[in-house]
Image (cartoon, rainbow, N blue to C red; front, side, top):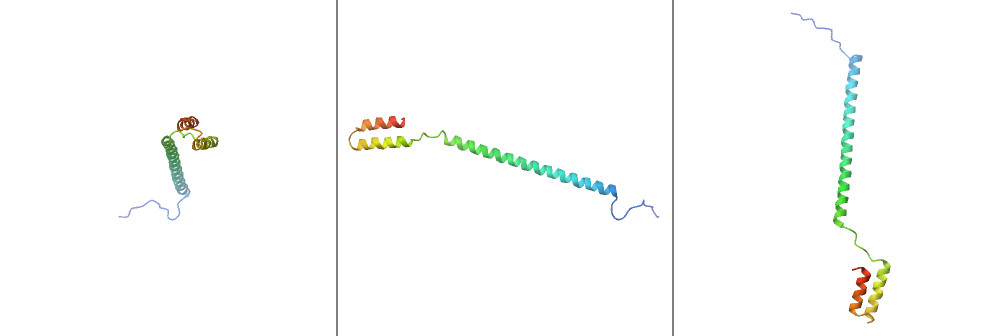
Amino acid sequence: MFVRRPFVRAGRPGLIGTAARTAVVAGTATAVAGRVAQRQQAHATQAAEAQAYEQQQAAARSGPPAPSAGTGDIAELQRLADMHSQGLLTDDEFAAAKSRLLGL
């Protein structure tokens, strides 16, 4: 028995088929590009948060900065040590002056 098939067009798709295919491709490309941008943004945010956390932890581990003696304090300590070595200051006087100078 012979079945009649509707007319099937061979060759290139028509205008509507081409427009539909273009819309699908463009929509897919837009969705993929949006998702890639979203992942990159999430990765950048996560990296920035990790870096801030590391800096915060490093600051917490180091504690407050130690007071440092200025150049004038070093010269004064040297002068006190010279006086002590010459016998002009006793051990107790040297220790007291050094503690006072260093703020101990």
